[in-house]
Length: 514
Image (cartoon, rainbow, N blue to C red):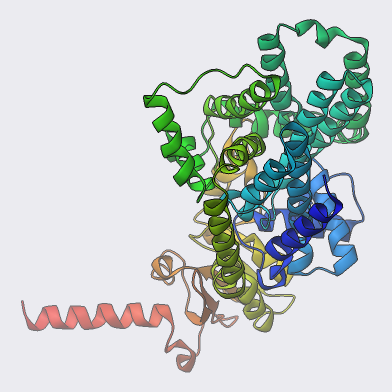
């Protein structure tokens, strides 16, 4: 390994993952949950219990929120800060891949593996996304790398490092941080007929170290929040996610095959045909070497584990990308000219996308502009609500306002409120019922073009549009006077006025043409 390789790969990573991050606003529906939680933790001065909308939030463990808080303290509450640690860990992942592949094969394979990984669609996306997956990927990868180094060299220190990395993974995303690498290790040792290694004193000592690290957060959380923490964190976000599909449309057997082909673009479009060619010509065989066995078990175990889970998400199989990138890097080492043409082309494409297209795409999925509109048209006494649309958490993050989710009646609120072992557990935003609305109060509703037609009907009152963006329309209520009147001059250009006039004209036309 050469120091200049690390330098060049670091510069390559900085250009690919840091450049332009300040141009990408926080998006809905996932990124904004993390940033809003970190923001509220900072405001409360509580760095132990995640919280959102004033409620404790047991969706994910603490580590990623602490990353966001650290970035906000270093760079301010900016879009660049929100994307800093995913990008930083993406760069670290390139270097780790280079180092591991170089030790397994050669410097050339190490460079090819690192560059190939960095230029895949999924890795590039997750290197910018404000979600836990890049942190989980790096810590799970280090868990398995350290284990293999311990197995290969018989040096106990690597086993302790492996369990320490697994503990950080569990503090990032929960039990999967240990269960997933544990499955890989179990299957590999079974193949190697070396299961007795699991009972070695160093493995048991590593497990003790793991428990000591994770107890720093999990034990205080249980002591402070008791069964609520266990039921929601372990029950809903782990057991329920594994047994009941959250998005039924994704529960098809070929889902992760499509994720692989698209996620590894453009390299999958070369490797997949080459794989089937070798398959049909009977050139494929089970690996005899330890390193190939380990990489194969790593990739297939991750794929198989998540294929068996009820809930399927695009990023779940992400931990298989390092072993596959290394195997692909070894393949492309024999096709050097083609590799560098593709790598340069994808790098140029990503850089152009960051500066030209991606900012507009993220803007269309963010409430940043909408938040500015709300702040300009509201006071501390204004009631802000959402109606008929996915709750835009990014609006809260950027504006400091907390909209209420408007439903028809109090009974509908009870149906939507969080229930144990139910996907409604994520509905912890404030609610409001149409039947309880105060039409003398300054009120703003966030909706979309489809549901705006219901303002004045399903949601009574005179509503006038004050702005819109690619996703939402924003309407303001013209309040009634205390005696129930509303000024005639204020009725025009409102939704209810238009509805009334349309109906009157329709009735007049029908009377003239019986």
